[in-house]
Amino acid sequence: MTHPTGLVLPKFFLYYDSPVKLVRTEDGGMACWRLSLDTGRWQAADNLVNRVLFGRDDEIFEISPEEFVWYVEQERGLSLCGEGPIFALYETVRAIEDTLQEERRYPTPQEQALIRGVRRRTFVMFEEQLQQAGDPAADPTIASAAS
Image (tube, rainbow, N blue to C red; front, side, top):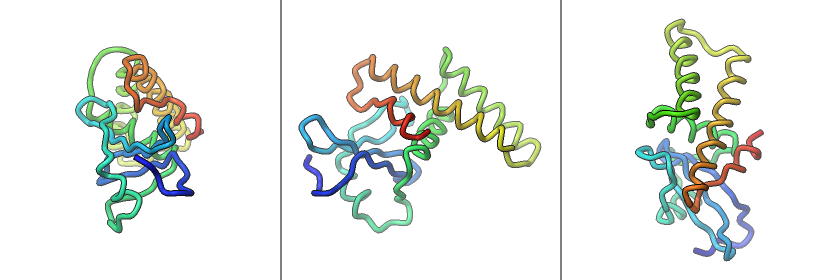
């Protein structure tokens, strides 16, 4: 898929609360990927390109790389379960969030920084695993753009 002249990629979106990314392909084209809540992997979503770029909908938002990492890891942490270091970190964030809800308060700046740091770390870890498994859409470097 080609991209409009002057379009700077990558671009990140929330499409009806689902993280979506538009990225440049090796041949100079463009690909769209949407997070799968079932697997945490990326699903091809080229059918959404025109909607996210040109749609006038209250449920489509362009977001920063930092926000993208946050939403991806929020969704993975809520939707997936398993064993290993990534899931232990998801449990850590969930425990903090549960405490905040029980205490009916907003997170302190320290808690916000901790959650943000853990989510950035789990994003890199998950994306690296996807890369090793051959997922063409995996990109752990997005987290460094989010710093």
